[in-house]
Length: 447
Image 1: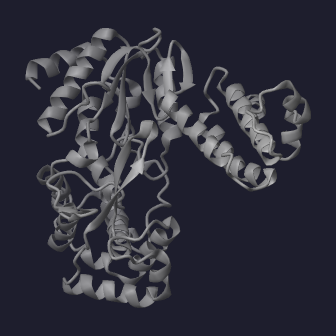
Image 2: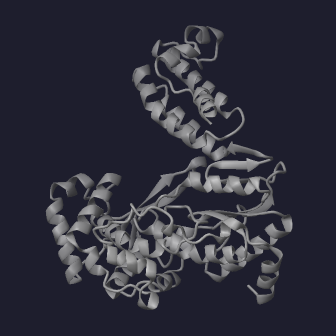
Image 3: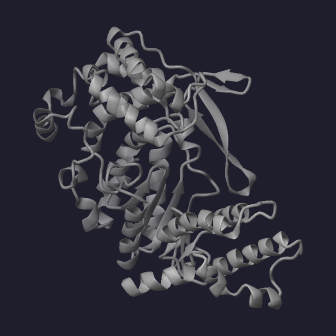
């Protein structure tokens, strides 16, 4: 960015109040910090700063028995598949104490070597897939231990504009921030999409940002080793030259660390930005400001070895039909907040799976499986507008009527008047079916 451009933007855009906030760590709860690692003395140093701004002698806190035991409990609770060595959570649990002792010895003596990451393809909407790396259980434990040690160091500096994968912050908080800016008239929105972000983060620059705060050579070697971890996918095997493996425990923290300078840059320029991991929007009061913001982002992204997706990045006035934006599952357009089409189709696919004709379970069992999924979906999308809740309720009941017909050896789609009379809405409600419309009504009354 040129100096002229920076000066003109600073003069032309008043810094919004929300962007002037200090890092959130000081005002928020510290309950998430592992106090077995972070003593009062270390927390005081975290607040007051350490000499040279860098932390030394951290590796001993990683291989401490208590740290590894806590990390193991975290990995066990998350469950997950086995890595390339085939060792599952269940198998590790049988001899957990011995395995953790061996891990501590290997880390202490410098013998620890991470195994290659097993890559799988996870289905996405529209028949697409996304890659997911599955480290071995022992590597997930060591990464969880390292994260417990280093996260407070970086979290202290992260700005309030960042919400993704951070303690005490969630998608709902990010959406709430977007709502606040829209209500203030910041309706000209830059909807930015970083192309292949998790696979394209430059390793050298990421390591430089880590080294700005950490000087423990053995810990830095661990982090560098994970970035260079071999990946195995079927018969293919390669060493990545960029990115952080999706699925790794440390990946979200490192991804936030790399984009932290973007948060700082846009905040200094006076823009209202809301970021959730690699998904972010910049909200502006005028079309001119949005255009400038997009140019600023493009310049920063290119200078930092990343790229914006040409088809998924745009700016527009979200009050105008056709110029809306999508963020964290919602679509904001023409003053409405709706469920985006991909999120809606994802739910419909799940409903179709639970109510497939070939399923031999009882209606009660099917409803019991549907209920927690529908309850969770409503909990997240209850602020959506439109007739989406009625449409989904009708789809679910129609699928259940068709399934009941199938169980009676009477093929059909459950749409006829006789089926509605035989199995009315009250029939399903009496059997405990979660109704989105009713849940929305009760939520509205409560508000």
